[in-house]
Structure formats: structure tokens, C-alpha cells
Length: 253
Image 1 (cartoon, one colour):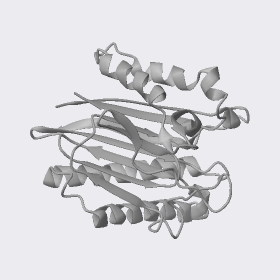
Image 2 (cartoon, rainbow, N blue to C red):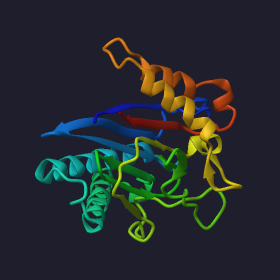
Image 3 (cartoon, rainbow, N blue to C red):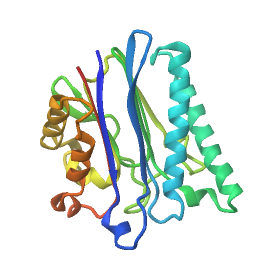
Image 4 (cartoon, one colour):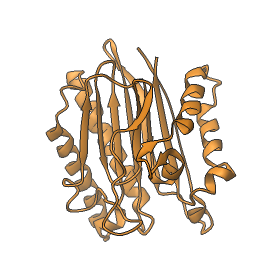
């Protein structure tokens, strides 16, 4: 089995109108180790109120990506990745952010970001999350969130990797059967992709996107990532949120 992956991140109008760059970051792709192919997806959203949230998001994704690659290359098994390993990786990623903050004479909270991660193979999947945004998978023909977006104590707040209590807000889940469709996205897409009243994913949002990716020819001339970016920049999508928007899609087949 192989994975087809597409990802895009666009700057929201709230940043663009002020001449600022976006603060979302993602790392996504597939790799083959021995006879198995794996999907790795990571999304981080820098807090809009920070000066360096985007850099924190980049450090978080790059750190976790390196740890996951190392674990898969050493063992070749997602099932061998324990919760304690994930917690160690999260601590190390936070330490890397802290080290950069100290080197720049800044505070770690200046680099605040959320974190979503997914690792999937032929027969097992691992998911983890801190904060809002969501991971949606297809199970038995239906779309469901792995974790519901975590909100903070007050409106429009959430939890961050930079928090001292990040281990308390870290959610981890394992699945013995890997889903054949996986989406990760930052909170800029939540109002489109999720029904907060019913606490469920909108099938009508995901079905056409996954179908388009599955039917994409996946050649050197394919521009699916470009199509995904144009979708995220559409006026009707931007009208639902002025925040940055990141979407990672993966299909197995």
C-alpha cells in the first residue's frame, strides 16, 4: 500500500492586511522503509498574539519530524512508538523552542504554538495533539475527529506547546488499523470542517477533497498542492475565517 499526500498553508487576511507573514507551519509526506510505506503529517499554528509563533511552529514540526523518522528507521514499526516516547519528543521540542527564545533574548511564550501529529502505515496509526485544530480520519465510511479541538479557559484561547503544562494537555491515540484517509488542519479551517453544535466532522467538506486527491494522477506535472492552496484562498473560504489556514490530506490506496 502507498500513501498519496498533499499539503498547503496560506496566510490569513488578518496577517496579510498588516503586511505580516503567516504563523502556520506544516511538514507532511510519505516515506518507504524496507517493505512498508508511512505517512507523516505535522501541523503547528503559532499564536496570533505572539511575535514569533510562526518560528515556534516551524521548530515544533521540524523537531517532531526528526524524532519520528529516527524511530521508524530504527524499528520500522509505529506500534513500537510508546506514549512515553511521544511525551519525550514533545519535551525536547519545547526545549528546542526555549533554547532559541533564550538565544534571542525572548520569552518562550513569544513562540507559542499548537501541535498536531499523525503517523500511519499499513496496519497501525499514531496521533497526538496539543491545542486546537483537528485531525479527521475516515473509519468505516464515516469521518470522525481523533480529538476534539482543545479550548482554553476563556473564549478564543487554547493550549500551546510552550506552556509549562503542555504534558497535561497533550492527547495521544493509537489505532491498530490505519485509516485510509487522514486530514490535519489548523483552527483557521475549523468552522468549515467541523460542526461544533454536533461535535462531528462535515463529510461534505472532506469527501470531495479526498476524492480529488485520490483521483489526482500524481505525476511530475500534477499541481494538486497548488489546487489546494487556491481552494484555501477562495473568497467563500476566507469569509469564514481571517486566520491562517493549513490543510494536510493523505489517502492510502
